[in-house]
Structures are given as structure tokens and as C-alpha cells.
Length: 60
Image 1 (spheres, rainbow, N blue to C red):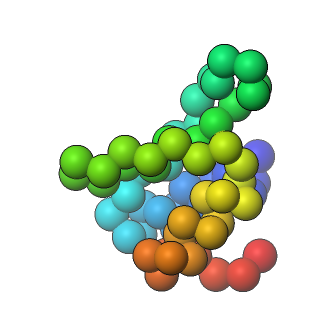
Image 2: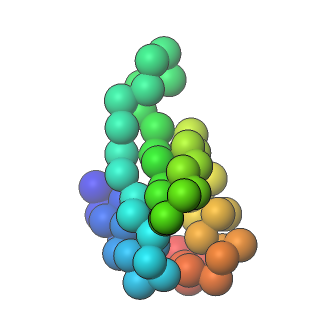
């Protein structure tokens, strides 16, 4: 999935790790981590919004 790989690279440039995980009923979710921060996000749009908050992504 190209969109995920792009967001994963963007997160890495900011020192974060982004992983796709199996979620119970929702199918899949995304977990972003850095040091003691672990945040679960439900959609790629949520990931984009989080990265925008930390200045880690571009439009697209």
C-alpha cells in the first residue's frame, strides 16, 4: 500500500515508527510510537492528521 509506505517514511523522518496492526472488529489500525508515546489511530486519514500536527507530512 503506497499511501501507508509514504506515511511510514514521513513518520520515520520525524523519529516516529508507524506500524499497521490487526484490530479486533475494525480490521486494521495504525500504531505510531516514539520514546514513551504510543498512539493507536484507526485510519490513514487519522495518521495524516497526527503527522500534520507534529509537522511530519505533506498534502497528498
